[in-house]
Image 1 (cartoon, rainbow, N blue to C red):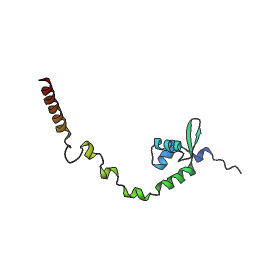
Image 2: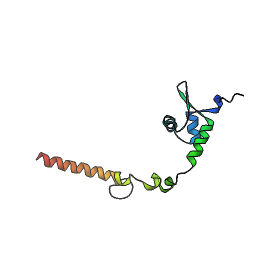
Image 3: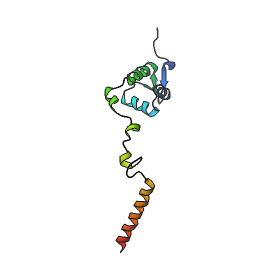
Image 4: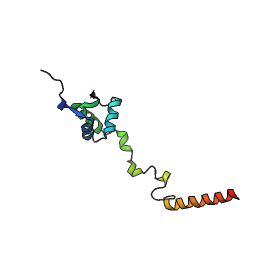
Length: 112
């Protein structure tokens, strides 16, 4: 009996991305890195459905370390750097006006 996978047993990159809830670029990265086994046919990647199921099952096992991390939306790591949100420097419009006024003062001082 022939157990060779048929085309129906293979998923495209787009189908795999949808099944894994990832972007197509992320799936291509998994393929390039060898984390997800696939086969190139006519210049396109195809992945066995069973490999996608196994990969998805392994991805859903949450790493204990990841549980300790807060999501970026909760930690807002860039707020202090770029001055968005509350706190000093958060009023971008006034910041631009202050920058321009200081620039004019500096230029006048240099020109005299």
